[in-house]
Image (cartoon, rainbow, N blue to C red; front, side, top):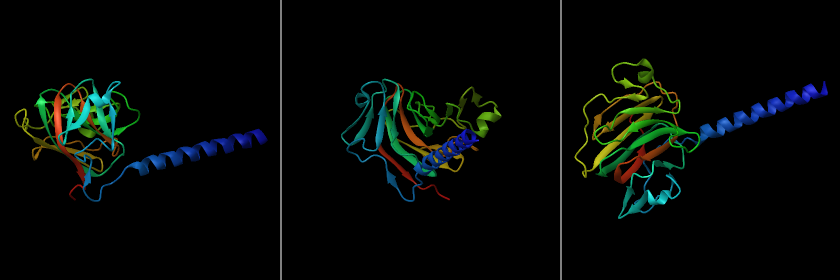
Length: 220
Protein backbone atom coordinates (compact mmCIF):
# COMPACT_ATOMS: atom_id res chain seq x y z
CA UNK A 1 0.00 0.00 0.00
CA UNK A 2 2.85 2.33 0.90
CA UNK A 3 4.60 1.71 -2.41
CA UNK A 4 1.39 2.21 -4.39
CA UNK A 5 0.66 5.47 -2.60
CA UNK A 6 4.21 6.62 -3.18
CA UNK A 7 3.90 5.75 -6.86
CA UNK A 8 0.64 7.67 -7.20
CA UNK A 9 2.10 10.67 -5.44
CA UNK A 10 5.08 10.55 -7.78
CA UNK A 11 2.79 10.46 -10.80
CA UNK A 12 0.78 13.39 -9.49
CA UNK A 13 3.99 15.35 -8.91
CA UNK A 14 5.19 14.64 -12.44
CA UNK A 15 1.86 15.71 -13.90
CA UNK A 16 1.96 18.85 -11.81
CA UNK A 17 5.46 19.67 -13.00
CA UNK A 18 4.42 19.09 -16.62
CA UNK A 19 1.42 21.37 -16.18
CA UNK A 20 3.58 24.11 -14.66
CA UNK A 21 6.13 23.74 -17.47
CA UNK A 22 3.38 23.93 -20.09
CA UNK A 23 1.96 26.99 -18.42
CA UNK A 24 5.37 28.63 -18.28
CA UNK A 25 5.89 27.88 -21.97
CA UNK A 26 2.51 29.40 -22.83
CA UNK A 27 3.32 32.50 -20.77
CA UNK A 28 6.52 33.00 -22.75
CA UNK A 29 4.54 34.13 -25.80
CA UNK A 30 4.33 37.92 -25.76
CA UNK A 31 1.33 39.65 -27.29
CA UNK A 32 2.45 43.09 -28.50
CA UNK A 33 0.29 45.98 -27.34
CA UNK A 34 2.38 48.56 -29.19
CA UNK A 35 5.17 48.59 -31.74
CA UNK A 36 8.11 46.37 -30.77
CA UNK A 37 11.42 47.04 -32.51
CA UNK A 38 13.22 43.78 -33.27
CA UNK A 39 16.23 45.48 -34.87
CA UNK A 40 17.88 48.46 -33.20
CA UNK A 41 19.99 49.47 -36.21
CA UNK A 42 23.23 48.79 -34.36
CA UNK A 43 23.56 45.10 -33.56
CA UNK A 44 21.62 41.83 -33.29
CA UNK A 45 20.62 42.16 -29.66
CA UNK A 46 17.53 40.04 -28.98
CA UNK A 47 18.39 37.51 -31.66
CA UNK A 48 19.94 34.04 -31.51
CA UNK A 49 22.10 33.08 -34.50
CA UNK A 50 21.97 29.53 -35.86
CA UNK A 51 24.21 28.92 -38.89
CA UNK A 52 27.13 26.53 -38.69
CA UNK A 53 30.04 27.03 -36.29
CA UNK A 54 30.48 30.76 -36.90
CA UNK A 55 26.99 32.22 -37.41
CA UNK A 56 28.28 35.74 -36.83
CA UNK A 57 29.91 35.44 -40.26
CA UNK A 58 26.51 34.66 -41.78
CA UNK A 59 24.55 37.40 -40.03
CA UNK A 60 25.98 40.79 -39.13
CA UNK A 61 25.12 44.48 -38.99
CA UNK A 62 26.90 47.02 -41.19
CA UNK A 63 25.96 50.64 -41.85
CA UNK A 64 22.65 50.26 -40.04
CA UNK A 65 21.38 47.19 -41.91
CA UNK A 66 21.31 43.46 -41.21
CA UNK A 67 23.33 41.54 -43.77
CA UNK A 68 23.02 37.84 -44.52
CA UNK A 69 25.51 35.98 -46.71
CA UNK A 70 23.10 33.09 -47.37
CA UNK A 71 25.68 30.47 -46.33
CA UNK A 72 25.60 28.13 -44.51
CA UNK A 73 21.93 27.24 -44.09
CA UNK A 74 20.45 28.48 -40.83
CA UNK A 75 18.53 31.38 -39.34
CA UNK A 76 18.46 34.26 -36.90
CA UNK A 77 15.59 33.92 -34.46
CA UNK A 78 14.04 36.04 -31.77
CA UNK A 79 15.00 35.18 -28.21
CA UNK A 80 11.35 35.52 -27.21
CA UNK A 81 8.15 33.91 -28.46
CA UNK A 82 5.22 36.00 -29.70
CA UNK A 83 1.54 35.66 -30.54
CA UNK A 84 -1.13 37.82 -32.16
CA UNK A 85 1.04 40.29 -34.05
CA UNK A 86 1.91 41.81 -37.39
CA UNK A 87 5.53 41.20 -38.36
CA UNK A 88 7.02 43.81 -40.68
CA UNK A 89 10.39 43.64 -42.42
CA UNK A 90 11.89 45.88 -45.07
CA UNK A 91 14.46 43.87 -47.00
CA UNK A 92 16.07 43.36 -50.37
CA UNK A 93 18.18 40.79 -52.16
CA UNK A 94 21.72 41.83 -53.01
CA UNK A 95 22.11 38.45 -54.70
CA UNK A 96 18.77 36.78 -55.49
CA UNK A 97 18.18 33.32 -54.08
CA UNK A 98 16.30 31.59 -51.31
CA UNK A 99 15.28 32.75 -47.83
CA UNK A 100 12.13 32.98 -45.74
CA UNK A 101 10.49 33.91 -42.46
CA UNK A 102 9.53 31.12 -40.06
CA UNK A 103 6.66 31.96 -37.73
CA UNK A 104 5.44 30.05 -34.65
CA UNK A 105 8.80 28.30 -34.35
CA UNK A 106 9.06 25.87 -31.44
CA UNK A 107 11.32 23.10 -30.18
CA UNK A 108 15.05 22.70 -30.63
CA UNK A 109 17.26 24.79 -32.87
CA UNK A 110 17.74 22.56 -35.90
CA UNK A 111 17.76 23.15 -39.64
CA UNK A 112 14.80 23.31 -39.94
CA UNK A 113 12.63 23.65 -36.77
CA UNK A 114 8.89 23.10 -36.39
CA UNK A 115 7.26 26.21 -37.85
CA UNK A 116 5.31 27.66 -40.75
CA UNK A 117 7.61 29.10 -43.39
CA UNK A 118 6.43 32.18 -45.18
CA UNK A 119 8.59 31.77 -48.26
CA UNK A 120 11.09 34.50 -48.95
CA UNK A 121 12.73 33.13 -52.08
CA UNK A 122 13.14 35.57 -54.94
CA UNK A 123 9.92 35.72 -56.98
CA UNK A 124 8.21 33.25 -54.63
CA UNK A 125 7.51 35.36 -51.54
CA UNK A 126 4.10 34.43 -50.19
CA UNK A 127 4.30 30.67 -50.64
CA UNK A 128 3.91 28.51 -47.50
CA UNK A 129 5.96 25.51 -46.37
CA UNK A 130 4.96 23.37 -43.40
CA UNK A 131 7.92 22.18 -41.31
CA UNK A 132 8.26 19.62 -38.52
CA UNK A 133 4.61 18.60 -38.34
CA UNK A 134 3.10 22.09 -38.49
CA UNK A 135 -0.31 21.97 -40.16
CA UNK A 136 -3.15 24.21 -41.37
CA UNK A 137 -6.48 23.87 -43.14
CA UNK A 138 -5.54 24.81 -46.70
CA UNK A 139 -2.60 22.41 -46.70
CA UNK A 140 -4.62 19.51 -45.35
CA UNK A 141 -7.40 20.18 -47.87
CA UNK A 142 -5.05 19.64 -50.83
CA UNK A 143 -5.86 21.04 -54.24
CA UNK A 144 -4.00 22.55 -57.18
CA UNK A 145 -1.83 24.85 -55.06
CA UNK A 146 -0.54 22.09 -52.76
CA UNK A 147 2.73 20.34 -53.63
CA UNK A 148 3.83 18.13 -50.75
CA UNK A 149 4.74 20.44 -47.88
CA UNK A 150 4.26 23.51 -50.07
CA UNK A 151 1.14 25.65 -50.59
CA UNK A 152 1.72 28.08 -53.41
CA UNK A 153 0.78 31.72 -53.24
CA UNK A 154 -2.58 32.96 -54.52
CA UNK A 155 -1.19 35.50 -56.99
CA UNK A 156 1.78 36.26 -59.22
CA UNK A 157 4.73 37.63 -57.28
CA UNK A 158 4.57 41.24 -56.12
CA UNK A 159 8.28 41.80 -55.50
CA UNK A 160 10.43 44.57 -56.89
CA UNK A 161 13.61 44.02 -58.83
CA UNK A 162 16.68 42.70 -57.05
CA UNK A 163 18.41 45.47 -55.14
CA UNK A 164 15.17 47.36 -54.45
CA UNK A 165 13.55 47.39 -51.01
CA UNK A 166 10.44 45.29 -50.36
CA UNK A 167 8.08 45.24 -47.40
CA UNK A 168 7.06 41.82 -46.11
CA UNK A 169 4.14 41.89 -43.66
CA UNK A 170 2.94 38.74 -41.91
CA UNK A 171 -0.17 38.94 -39.76
CA UNK A 172 -0.36 36.14 -37.19
CA UNK A 173 -3.66 36.51 -35.38
CA UNK A 174 -5.23 33.60 -33.50
CA UNK A 175 -4.92 30.52 -35.71
CA UNK A 176 -4.56 32.53 -38.94
CA UNK A 177 -1.41 33.61 -40.83
CA UNK A 178 -1.65 36.15 -43.66
CA UNK A 179 1.52 37.19 -45.57
CA UNK A 180 1.56 40.32 -47.75
CA UNK A 181 4.28 41.57 -50.09
CA UNK A 182 4.40 45.31 -50.79
CA UNK A 183 0.83 45.69 -49.59
CA UNK A 184 -0.66 42.77 -51.52
CA UNK A 185 -2.07 39.74 -49.68
CA UNK A 186 -0.30 36.69 -51.13
CA UNK A 187 -1.65 33.70 -49.19
CA UNK A 188 -3.85 32.54 -46.31
CA UNK A 189 -3.39 29.88 -43.65
CA UNK A 190 -6.35 29.15 -41.37
CA UNK A 191 -6.81 26.77 -38.45
CA UNK A 192 -3.07 26.58 -37.84
CA UNK A 193 -1.94 23.85 -35.45
CA UNK A 194 0.41 26.30 -33.64
CA UNK A 195 -0.53 29.87 -32.75
CA UNK A 196 2.58 31.25 -31.05
CA UNK A 197 6.32 30.85 -31.07
CA UNK A 198 9.60 32.46 -32.03
CA UNK A 199 10.28 34.17 -35.34
CA UNK A 200 13.18 33.17 -37.60
CA UNK A 201 14.68 34.76 -40.72
CA UNK A 202 16.49 32.27 -42.89
CA UNK A 203 19.91 32.00 -44.42
CA UNK A 204 19.27 29.70 -47.37
CA UNK A 205 21.38 30.72 -50.33
CA UNK A 206 20.19 34.23 -51.12
CA UNK A 207 22.16 37.27 -49.96
CA UNK A 208 19.90 39.85 -48.40
CA UNK A 209 19.81 43.01 -46.31
CA UNK A 210 17.14 44.25 -43.90
CA UNK A 211 16.79 47.78 -42.57
CA UNK A 212 13.61 47.54 -40.50
CA UNK A 213 12.24 44.60 -38.51
CA UNK A 214 9.43 45.13 -36.03
CA UNK A 215 6.13 43.89 -34.61
CA UNK A 216 2.90 45.71 -33.96
CA UNK A 217 -0.59 44.67 -32.88
CA UNK A 218 -2.71 43.28 -35.73
CA UNK A 219 -5.62 45.43 -36.80
CA UNK A 220 -8.92 44.17 -35.43
